[in-house]
Amino acid sequence: MKDIRQRLVNLFKKGYCTPQIARIAKELKEPSTTIHYNIKKLEKLGAIRAYKAIFDYKKIDEGFCAFVLIAISPAEYNDPEKMAADLAKLPEVESVDICTGDWEIILKVRVKDQDEYYQLVKNVISRKGIEKINTITSLKQVKSDFIKVL
Amino acid sequence: MKDIRQRLVNLFKKGYCTPQIARIAKELKEPSTTIHYNIKKLEKLGAIRAYKAIFDYKKIDEGFCAFVLIAISPAEYNDPEKMAADLAKLPEVESVDICTGDWEIILKVRVKDQDEYYQLVKNVISRKGIEKINTITSLKQVKSDFIKVL
DNA sequence: TAATTGATTGAATAATATTCAAAAAATAGA
DNA sequence: TCTATTTTTTGAATATTATTCAATCAATTA
Picture (tube, rainbow over the protein chains, first blue to last red):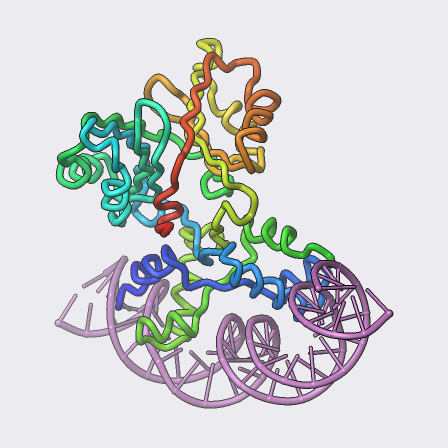
């Protein structure tokens, strides 16, 4: 056994997928060459950033999901982007947004369990420049990535 | 012009993509039939929910992104799932999570602009059973869907 | 209205996914 | 440990699909 599964999951997080032109052509009742042309156009315009898989996170050992609200220290107000970029490097972090209001940065994080989350916050997310962290744990994901979870 | 673009975007939100087996096989240095077998296995296990496109949302007229924190009325505490399921039906809603803490439901929403967001909250999201809504607007998306935005 | 650019399309080709059968590896039961 | 069963790996053959190309058509611009 080579445990190809985990390696596939890692690739699928980044991309390694492609549109199903024939199926789309059938669905939209247009010639496949027309579909092909328009998809390439969308790609050239930069409207499509990647084609990737969406997971049932529980089944790939990433069942714990939380929103991390971060308030940065006043000294960092002029440049939250540096910290945001650093946090974006973490593979456990699904999204990083610089926001309005009391919390300047919002993360969405996926890990295996609460234990792993604790380690992540303690060792990695917490750092100089952060004033306060507030975790909102997702108890149930009803929809994610525009796809409903039944 | 048939405006095939918008129709493609709509399909790509749901799926209509597929893994690139040949490319993955090359990357992992394994035979393509082995890759094929393992991908089908992941699908049968339900670990992969869909293959879809990830967009540069500004370029598909969905540049406005916000987190909507929702506190539900005490009368609804016993069943937040009904409301969550209703909200999940909205195409503008990327994710719905039932959460711990002061805000029981968190939405991530994508629309064209502030104007469209206002209409959405006023006419659709606000409803009986909601105690309070708090919007956190994303000023800058640094990472989304595990993909960094440069 | 002529000239240019962008979009649609069918036919031919290239590339890719899928099926199948066989072998190897892992697992479970005695 | 030995054996039976299931799971995984793999190459060869086939089926399906994407891509290229050239021609037409539509839209835009000067």
